[in-house]
Length: 233
Ligand code: URA
Image (cartoon, rainbow, N blue to C red; front, side, top):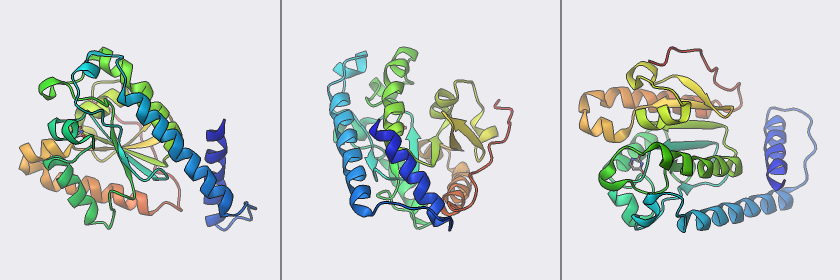
């Protein structure tokens, strides 16, 4: 229930920023909303840290809930933690994460300003693709996380993550740089930074994806990105 008030408040704040005549309680309410959101996120992270819904629960060193700004307008969603993420409990901290941080930095976007997470919260052994039952166990956590974060935009990183979110086979090279939708939230499709490290010839495309995303993110006071009907494969 609390969530719906956070959601309404953010919409009203947005309308106020657009110059509409909206009356809002002062920041005391806002900061208590914000801190209750942090409490809820922490509660969810604690629940995930002891999850045993699938086999990965007994294989992990650390669950990787995600990090960043609880009030982020933009949430990045990757596939699953890798070895460094499993060690540290933090998402996108290896070489791929560094590349993502670097590209965002070119547009003045810091990791603290956005939120970064994965579909799976635990590392699959040897970084294999997540299995359907692992996704079925873990995706509800992602949905609860997004419900709390209430972002304006999402960015799906890589073929597997985007395919999982869209529930359809996709060609990442065909739909990268387009806007899709996940549970009603605009979802930008981006190459995965790890794939770019393996295929450096795609580096420019990755830079172009992040640049397009940064533009949409900065244009936050205009309209939401248009989701175009696209042939996904
Ligand atoms: N790749 C992902 O998809 N997620 C991470 O956290 C790290 C690498």
